Length: 168
Image (cartoon, rainbow, N blue to C red; front, side, top):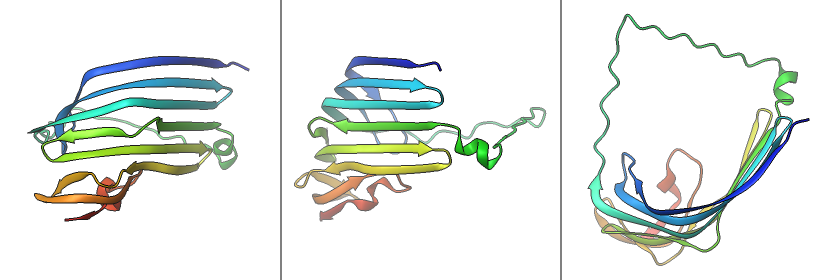
């Protein structure tokens, strides 16, 4: 069986954060990565430290729709395989943790986020454990109203801000 193992340290300084829907900013932090893979199984661990996200007041405009051309045709085939094949497709684990709470600072927010999140896939089953916790006492603007964070957790879901409770 084949295998691959490795580790790396990455330092990000003033790394641009440009994402529609959130203010433009820059990221600072250090990451320790470890990975192992072999025979259809893989595991990646990311430990973050010294995390700081500095946000501005500028936001990215929404992107324009991708132009279409009737002369261009795309063909995609999905070959899911049999149930037995899917059960033996291996596993994948991704774990992300913050060594200490990271800071998010900007005109509309000043808060800290810490915690650990782990995503595991075995065959067709995916399991998500943990989340990134918002430290109580931070502040942010919700619908242009100041709010003080009582508790919150960012997880994998459709609405990341759904689980933040605050005093407005």
